[in-house]
Image 1 (spheres, rainbow, N blue to C red):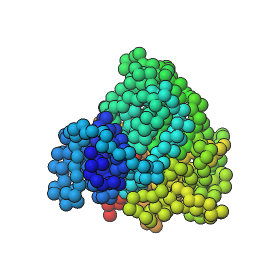
Image 2 (image 1 turned 120 degrees about the vertical axis):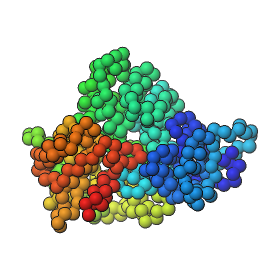
Image 3 (image 1 turned 180 degrees about the vertical axis):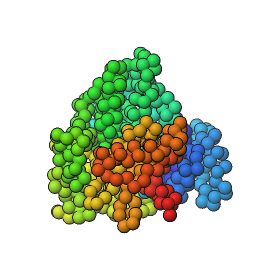
Image 4 (image 1 turned 90 degrees about the vertical axis):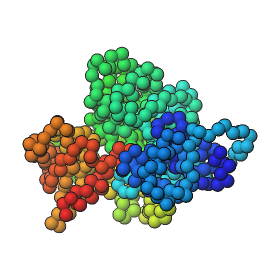
Length: 512
């Protein structure tokens, strides 16, 4: 049907609820040579604005969805002229057509689909991924995870997100295994449904962001876990957001009694600009955990620590890249390679790396066309992530644009947020943002933190003091202000990452 539109290279935005219709439409686009743009049904004003910006940015020709969803989306458009040019197609109403009319197009270097970034530090950008990118990264996932025809997966990750679509669906097809999928909303409503599905299906592979493991621990109780058997689960990947050692250990300590093995924990690193995965460990090996000197870290040095526990930062390795790929740690200002113990920006060279952002030539040059000043080798992908190599393995320190620098020392927001969230029972895990502001010609630290609904304004002063004391104790850093906000109000991306830049903008706007 798409081929009959006589628009080779056309662009189709996909907005489906979780389900097989999404996968059918995505594969149909790949077969027809139409560029797919995975999106999500815009059920809220925030998601609707993101949806509109994606449709306009990619100049979509088609919008593919179901008969139930399309009227709901159209009702929110308010006669938007840009949307009138798009052909809306309810794919669940298409009648079967003779397959002999289908013509197989050539692919390889052609764009397969456009993956929009989560927008955790900026406006979402369209990463243009080719069929070659997808095939290479599928090989990379296969290399790291050791998937095969015997692999059995369980995935609740959203299909509009690279980890769900590429890591879940496409890797299942690539290795010839089988997978059970269910909705992210069903996971959030009942997190233990994830583990029970792994148990009942004897799944070998599954995973998600760090928060998912935390959520399972918080919801776990002996009566709900009765009969749970996680002994088949060989690889529990953890990625897409900062990986916390405490989370991994809490999960293992909670579920080891139900057959979960320590060596199944699998931290890894990746990003949309490199299709998905960039580095990981060998499967069936325990994760590498190392403690570093916190004072040295603040001075941009990664030195293994010992002694004073308050001055140690325990970090999780994200493994190594494939031997055929290249990764270097680079000074983001001079574009020269860092010394072995220095923290810098992670640069990557790989066949999985995309070539450009859609309609953004300046950002494309900055991100995808970086060259080392040392020997002018390149081009490299600038990931925007800070990290270092220790013992041949990659450790992630934080996002370059989120880095907090106060009085010449570096502080990583995720480290501060981890301390803040544990400082008082009233604070919600995974719902804080640490950033710096310019106040009276000095950089000052601000914390924005969600508070549980059963705490009132009478408790706020004590909570703020407790947070400030915790930050001072662990970082010797004064907090300028602690802002306590209601549940489910902190700015997040469509994939659940904290938008620190948006939190900062909101704070500045309200404190003019």
